[in-house]
Image (spheres, rainbow, N blue to C red):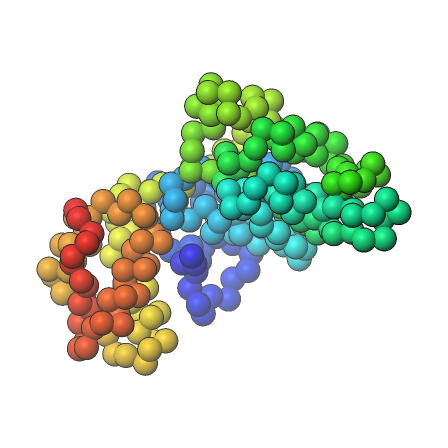
Length: 260
C-alpha cells in the first residue's frame, strides 16, 4: 500500500505522507526525530494502517537512505524457512553452497521485520543475540558474520500482552521497544478520510484515463460513517474498484458489503 503523492519530489522528509489529522501528525513528528538516529524502532498499528509506509519513510530520511531497505515478513513462513531467510544457510561443510540471508543483505542499511509478534520463540533468541552483538551464523555454519544494520519492526498486536502470555521474550521486547511509534487507525483520523479518498480517486482515474472529479454527498456520508476495519488499505481498494465501476464524472461507490 502506498499513499505517497506520485509526483512528489521530496526524498528527505515525511511531508508526502497523506494526512492532516493531529494523531497522524504526532506520529510523523516522532518519526522525524528518530529517523536520524540508529535506534531500533517498533511501529505499532492495525492491519492496513500504514506501518510499512512509516518504516520506509524513516529509512528515506535517515543517514542510511542510500543503502538497502530489506523487508522480512515474520508471519508468512515456517520457522526453518524463516530462519534461513533471515540468516542464510550453508548446505555443505566447506561452504561451497550458500544462501545469503536478509540480515546480511541489509548490511549498512535497514532490516524491516514485519509482524514481529509472529516470530517463533527459538528465532526470537537468535534475533536478540543479533541485536545485541550485530552478528550471526548462517544455518549450518559456525562462522560468525558481523553486519551493520538498523532494525525496524512492526506488529498489529500488543507485544506486552504477548510477553505476559509467554509468547514473546521480555528481553527482546525491551530491546525493540526503545522507540515505539503508533500509527493511528483510519477511524481515529476522520479528517483524513475524504483527503485520502480524493487522492486515490484522482490517481486511479488517471491510470484508467477517466474524468472523475467529484464525490457526491451520499457517498461522502457513507465514507465518513464507516468504521474502516481494514484502514487505509481498505479505503484504497474500495476507491480503486469504485473508479473502475464509475461511468460519469462522479465517483460511485458500491455501498454493499462495507457496513458503518
